[in-house]
Image 1 (cartoon, rainbow, N blue to C red):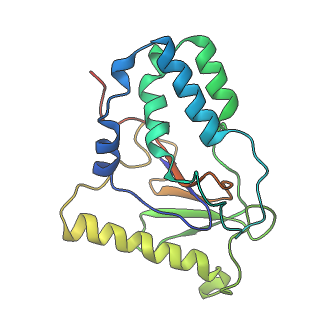
Image 2 (image 1 turned 90 degrees about the vertical axis):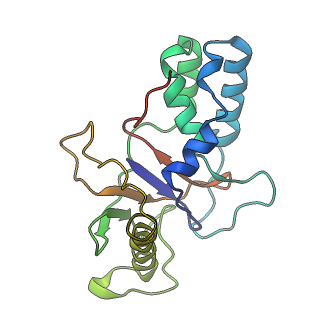
Length: 200
């Protein structure tokens, strides 16, 4: 599983995503009007735009916090979508995982944060660097991610999400977080390698 974030990013629990998905994308099946609406939503969320310099605030209005529910909806419905709809969606969404030149593993060992210090995807360097010359912005992200696990899993008793090796044995078991500039349309998105439940 991979999670991408811009300068302002958030994490959601699996339960939160499930509740958002319960509105039931799968029941629409291959209905043409549904597919047209889905393409329009994908284009509005992932369509081409000029990405601004790292750290630039998103434009006011029209920004959604998380694109994950839409990604899950697409993955769940993919088998019943028409070939033309699949091609249009594939043309709008980035394929594959981002390639960044550095990474940092969080102290508790649950996450691997991929980042770069240069170019349009550079992390915020205004906070300087900390331990092992890692940007403080990345270290703060790491601390927050480990705190979320402690709060949700250890304190509140939620099950830990499926390992990143589920369905991809060659992968490092840590969850991958890619700190990239996603533009001004949304703050973050999670791409699942596998679905932990099957639609009926």
